[in-house]
Length: 468
Ligand code: NAD
Image 1 (cartoon, rainbow, N blue to C red):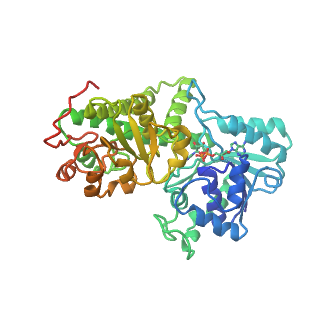
Image 2 (cartoon, rainbow, N blue to C red):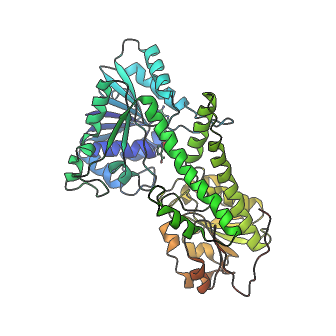
Image 3 (cartoon, rainbow, N blue to C red):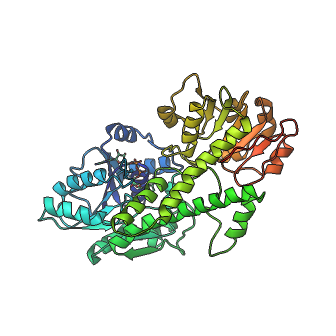
């Protein structure tokens, strides 16, 4: 099949490369000329395990190409996917759909023969109808159906998630469009992709192919927002429980384990910490709330999810303050800047927000992140107060405290003897609960984490407690 992918970011590039790997003929289009030029030279604009090899092998096979214009790509495509950004609109939290609508306008001019126009971007319910109206207005003669095909991949495991999805959701209001989408995803849903010798191994297989759910376009749009809001809810819920656990000297890891063993609840997304961030949850929860309000539906729970998440960052900041008494002039090692491990994405990263606040309070920060430092430099410019290190041990040199802000595997496997030699004071404040408190205590550290009793080294004493 011929596929056009509009937008070559985390979703567009990964989806495009995977579709090419199915054997489809894919062109990825992006307005960002620098990004396309770099992709043509084989450089990945994002850090995503497995992506570079996937792109290389499909470019080499002649199934994947890159373009800066729609012309020549849209006309011949069976399906045109819109995978551009949908950030929060400033002020009201609604999704800024200007990139989606701009893409729809450009597509309209070029439609030729029956084409399925697919929204892969995360959009509020009703956006498909808006796109259809734009296409209809600009090209009353064109034959097309607008379909919703929300994407559920996670940054850091995007390629694997795309190829081994829990489910593929297609919202199509016509059978003809549904059939095109069935053919696009057939290698995953009939299992033939998994039978190939060089297929990436994961949860799906030839005998256990990916499930496809066909719904109306409106339901598919709602499935995406409802899913992200529900995952954000789980995180905020466990964080709220963690705050209570701390007050009564309980252990949130044990509580989460006890809850997660209930198959109705499940263990995932029950990790207490600094709160969620990234390019999806914050904006999707806000947009979902906005759309409910606009349709006259009271869904205050969504605002509570957001508020708990915001408060979680304040609580962590206060933990740092409480452990150090004052931040002015203190040297802090920040381990992690990405919003989560295995990605270089710093959009809405709680780690970045925290570092900004620490700097504003007079602290000196040396940060280390395995992948996100290049991006971070754009928002946290190196200065007399803000430094970057080339390893976590270098970041920790002479530090008054080490802060773990991102759940990179590397930070869960620190050589603690070496770390202890580097630091000025052996204090770790862990926003990701990567260690057991007793283990840290045995290694000579004062250890403060989230939702668990802190352990203190005798000579340092217990810090004063601050009102949260
Ligand atoms: P991104 O910002 O990484 O990439 C978007 C790309 O679209 C950019 O390269 C930009 O230059 C390009 N673009 C913008 N307008 C364009 C236009 N008119 N024509 C061609 N290209 C254009 O975004 P992303 O993270 O890939 O997210 C894309 C969508 O997918 C969003 O709606 C997001 O909510 C959703 N989503 C993201 C993830 C994720 O983990 N990042 C997961 C699921 C869904």
